[in-house]
Image 1 (tube, rainbow, N blue to C red):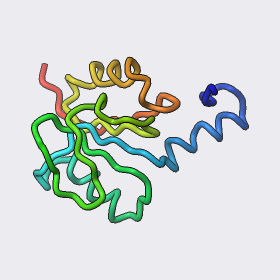
Image 2 (image 1 turned 180 degrees about the vertical axis):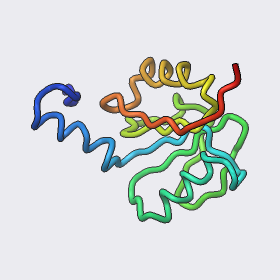
Image 3 (image 1 turned 90 degrees about the vertical axis):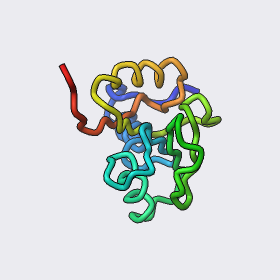
Image 4 (image 1 turned 120 degrees about the vertical axis):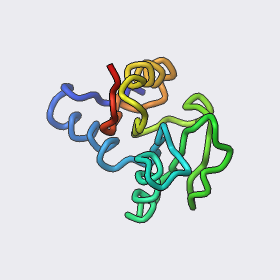
Amino acid sequence: MRLPRLGDGPVQARAGLEYMFRPSVIAVVGASRDPAKWGRRILEYTGRAGFSGTLYGVNPGVADLNVPRVTTVAALSDIGQPIDLAVLARPASTTAELMDECAALARVSNDHGLVTPGRSRV
């Protein structure tokens, strides 16, 4: 079954936006144990806001993020189900590579991703 994409028409576009605005599976890439980092804040705030779906924290260097209701994985490829929304909380220099990984894995439903502002070094 093909999921609706933006541009498929008004009814399909609304259905497609459901994945972004009402996701059931969210992956936060760049999740951290450090409470000052965006990846950690997003995980904590999402949980506190009453998100009832499945929440993954993605970080290859952390075995357990120690956040309630968050499953910690090392890579997007370790998530065994489609992801409705991928939040990329990584440096700007890694964004293109992460977007390519999401596309290659075909894990992100409907091509929805959210990129948090990050510092870029030139």
